[in-house]
Length: 242
Image 1 (cartoon, rainbow, N blue to C red):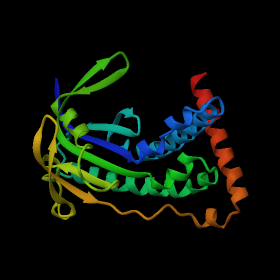
Image 2 (cartoon, rainbow, N blue to C red; image 1 turned 120 degrees about the horizontal axis):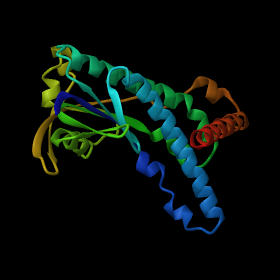
Image 3 (cartoon, helix red, strand yellow; image 1 turned 180 degrees about the vertical axis):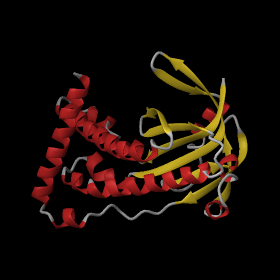
Image 4 (tube, rainbow, N blue to C red; image 1 turned 30 degrees about the horizontal axis):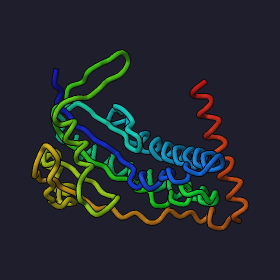
């Protein structure tokens, strides 16, 4: 059975460079230990930022699954003429929440490892589409399928020269009110298996993560704060798997 509704992916940009640890892993013993530790730091930060985004989006759209550095959401078309505008508002709130959380995590840079130092470069991009999809249930899991599900994932592979933007399809854009629709600019993208298609995009520009309280603290104090943060994350991870 096919469903008509909305698909959305919130993706954290900069993740690939954020976890480039393969060269470090080539070093004997200590290299692997450091790489494992750095990789855990990367995972903890990404998980924290994604959870923040999910908490904002999930009341309006349902989380289908996590995809590494991204979260895939969907919801049925409720026949509400303002539904697309409500989703756009959620996208805006998600971006604000992401930036606020990133600012609060500035202290992790006191760690000195590559992921912690590069965390300031993490940004959020969101793609959205109004289309058709099928829901396949396997045990307790729901898997979305269909051409439009493939399309929204391909939308992330575009040539927009920014790590922070919204991109929506025409089928989504045409449902927005005139004020929201005018925020977007048209763009043509050549997507694999779909060819040239028209989309609409909006570039975001968030300030660099800053926190006046963190900036006033000594580096040593921030080091203890980040050490406690990652220790807590490691404890939660053990509790989850035990």
